[in-house]
Every structure is written in C-alpha cells, then in structure tokens.
Image: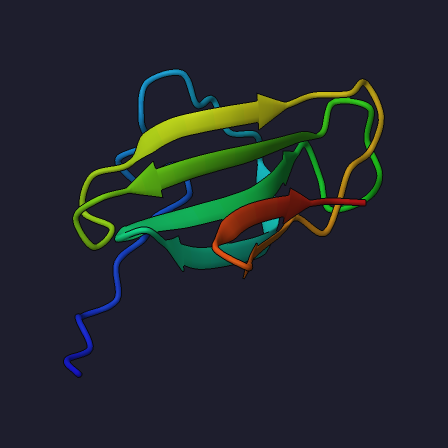
Amino acid sequence: MTVSEPRQVVGPDADMPEGIDILHSNNCLSIATYQDSLYIAWRSAPMHFASKKTKIFIMSSQNDGLVWTKEHEIELGSDAREPYLVEIAGKLYFYFF
C-alpha cells in the first residue's frame, strides 16, 4: 500500500465540485469505499454549534480522491450531525443524527 501526500478535500482552498457551497465550519466527517469509488460525507455550518443553516454534503470520487462529484445535499432547516457511511451486505448506507 502506498500513502499519498496529504491534500485538502473539503474547505475554502479545496477544489470543490460545482454546486457545493460550504459554510465556515466543516466537520463530522465520514469516508467509505464502495464499488471502486470513494465516498465522503460531512457537516457544513456557520459555526461548530447547532445551527438551522447546517447542511450535510455527500460526494464521491472514482479516481482516488483527485476529482469529486456532488452526490447529495441535505438541508433540513435544523441542526444535523454525525454523518456515517457504512457498507453492509453489499449496499452503501448513509445515516446521520
């Protein structure tokens, strides 16, 4: 196994896919591999504390995290946390609190 140099995937200096407008605080990260793709989900909010403006983003990469595609955005009008991606019995599941 070869480990790459670190690179920023999420943040103001990262090369974010079109349609992902992150907020100031980005945290609560989950990452998983599924069917030869890499998936990442995280919480984006104005601050770390609870906010009605919180969003959860899910994106995928088919080439080891160099180019990302937006898969889904969740915005409930209330706080959301702890995104979790997990493969069970050949299916990728997404949970959050």
